[in-house]
View 1 (tube, rainbow, N blue to C red):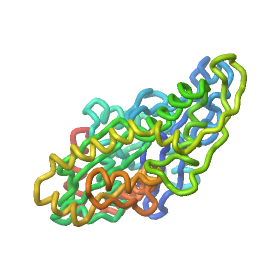
View 2 (view 1 turned 90 degrees about the vertical axis):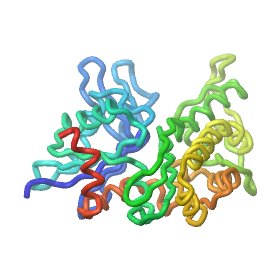
View 3 (view 1 turned 180 degrees about the vertical axis):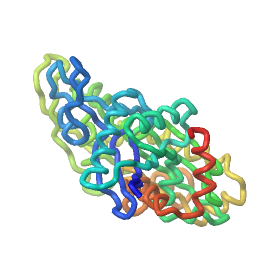
Length: 339
């Protein structure tokens, strides 16, 4: 009676937290700022993200996850501890039963690291759930039916491509090319084309404001600020939507290749279902302009973006928290080895 059920979408770029019966309660960047002199955590989430590139030498703002997996164990555990503590705040609950999403392609060691980090953060019971399954549930796909459903979850660190039928993943591919790589491609392009050094946050803003996968009407331009690599002084540059699209070509092609590869491994009957039902895009990367028409033109499959794509994974976790009996065998297979 003193246990609270918490679901965590532990993403490379953002972490979302939900509670059974309350829905999403937290949406924070996966960033931690800490003092290198004593390892004391100074800030987590939005407050820490605002510090990136603006901290003195004694304070470091880092993203402890890379490509969907833990890159810094202690910092990740500290971040989870802060999120779990906030979820339990102001309640009589002293114990936390936690479900955390992990990419489909993680190794045993990587998934164990997530489990151990959650344990160190204070969770008493821990289940791990594959991101494509959670995304499909959050996108209202009929995952329990004997029919193929295809989901492409483009997050910050990984792109998860999966075919799901009868409540389990039939075939999947986890590509470690996603939103962060789109930002890096823009950053690299600006550096080479304009001799301008910009930060990660500026690259992300460019992607959101004028980025696209295919041409669109009335394409805007954007003025950006950075440091001139020639003389080291601050400089303003005008960047066009066509330039940004050119920068994004390579990572988008890698995502399309992963979708094609997964379709090639799909059993014929399930492939026929996908032709009828189409491909569903989830994750923040699904919000890139015209990405659905691009994938449709390259694969010949109907493609649509899920409603509220950024929240699909955490919505799927919240549905798991509602104790649907269909989940029992699915979760048992994935979590019993850690108990």
